[in-house]
Amino acid sequence: MYTARDLHKSYGGVKALDGVDFEIHPGEVHALLGANGAGKSTLIKILAGGTVPEHGELQLDGRPVAFANSGEAADHGVAVVSQELNLFPHLDVLQNLFLGREPLAAAVALDRREMRRRARPVLEAVGLETNLNRPLQYLRLGEQQLVEIARALLNEPKILILDEPTSALQAAETERLLAVVRSLRDRGVAVVYVSHYLEDVFAVADRITVLRSGRVVVARRPRAEMTIQGTVNEMLGEVARVEVTAAEVEPLEEAAAASEPLVLDEVAIDGSLAPFSLAAQPGEVVGLAGLEGSGPQVVLDVIFGRRRPDTGSVALPGRRRAPRGMNQAVRAGVAYVPADRKRLGLMLDGSIADNVASVRGGPLKRMGVVMRRGRMRSRAEHWRRQLNIVMADTGANVGSLSGGNQQKVVFAKWLEADPAVILLDDPSRGVDIGAKEEMHSIIAQMAASRKVVIYTSSDLEEMTKVCDRVIVFFAGRAVGEVSGDLSEHALLEAINVGAVEAAA
Image (tube, rainbow, N blue to C red; front, side):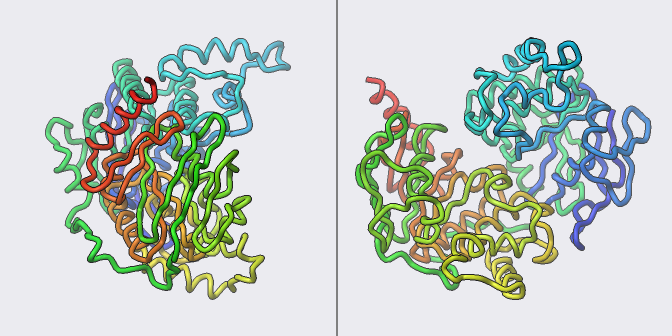
């Protein structure tokens, strides 16, 4: 058994944990839940040796332990799979699986044959079929997540901490992973399961603990005694949850408005995107839906200048020609909020103020848009108030923020550049229900400011709350459009009908 007693931890004056107790028993799936900033990430870091509490004690099998780092925790059987991947994109899959513990042949060279032998059953268990010699960067995000999980399982941990393990997975992959979690439990492994997908939690957890504002408000309660709605209420406490209507939304301050639509005319990329046309009006939120790799991300890449179409044209608001590269796109007023905020959206070692100013300090710097340090802090404080970012100080390290607040910083850095077009690629992946609702409000503010918003999400229900209309993709082709009375059922029906028609 692994126990934590009376844990306390603060960051820059903000108390992340305030006397937290937590227990992990062998052969049990223990769900750790909480809203944005509740303290989950800090507790996970302490349990996995990533940070040290200011007060409190850890005990493993009845003996006090104090891990100096995550490697030492792993040596004691504690493994963690983070939502933000700790992998190396340029190394192949097999190297990533065994990084730091590679078997050697004749004590001098990597024994790739032995590595393959060990990897095969674990990869089969998580349901990943891929070329092990392929560089990781060419795998889609969900496959990379499965590599991270397989890497942890290769070490045969006694305690496995899964932090948002299904956030990038498709439905079939999620079901396979939940089956793996149940199998590990049946083999006596203690599993800590952290997720904002409460349906997954209730499908697999034996017990549930809920944190709120750094304190335990539900302790090791059997799942059978909880309901999803009751769990949400415990996570959010007395925080009012209000549906925001378009008429109630205030535009963003100092926001530039698009005066013309974003137009794509028969844009196509051989093997990735069939000829696709779109006219997105200022103030409109257009959703692009489909399985990963079906086309929505390709469309975002074309608009942002990351990929050039083989045929067709793109006209940005107030600009005739498509951007020839990302820097040109930014200068033309296009913003891009990526799904992987930590690897692609933020400088984790930088301050909040530095991150907010990073776009102006990049491509826009060459246009003479540069901020001094005092101005940077002032602008970061402006966006803290505007977007309700919970932070101790604008000079604090952005890596110390919770996931939802980090994503708000990504929003802030792009809004600081005052774009006319905003591309949102699954922006609320891995954040809690409260933070999602705040982001929905921010997106509504963007639309109220007459910006063109193009939105993708792995959550169809979320798209129905955010979008004015949704274009459905299948296998690189736009196969339908849903508008008016948006519903998850209507989107699923459009995807299925489109898949049948595409296969005919």
